Image (cartoon, rainbow, N blue to C red; front, side, top):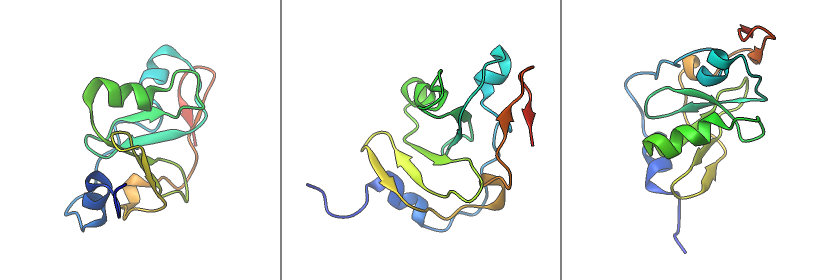
Amino acid sequence: MRAGMCEHLSSLQRPRSHALTPSSLGCEECLQSGDAWVQLRLCMTCGHVGCCDSSPNKHATRHFHATRHPVAKAFEPGEDWAWCYVDEELVEAIPAFPAESPRTHYAAHPRGFPSP
């Protein structure tokens, strides 16, 4: 059993010099296909925005399996928790820049565009 936080989450506790730019205001793949999502996740390696595992397509987890980028952060208002896929570890909060924490929940619009 490991004491403390995994290396992937620990690295995000240290000050970063710049924010990640989210790839979109909704799940990239769901926007392309016109599908809906429940909540969004932000890849802390590349800024990919994907849908959560409660969403039908689970694009954030699919992104991890395709890229092996280890950490996704909640991309929802007031939520700063992060999940490490590699170590299956959750941290309740990581320091985040304003662009990494939207002020509103972006819901899927019937035509596939997010609505604020």
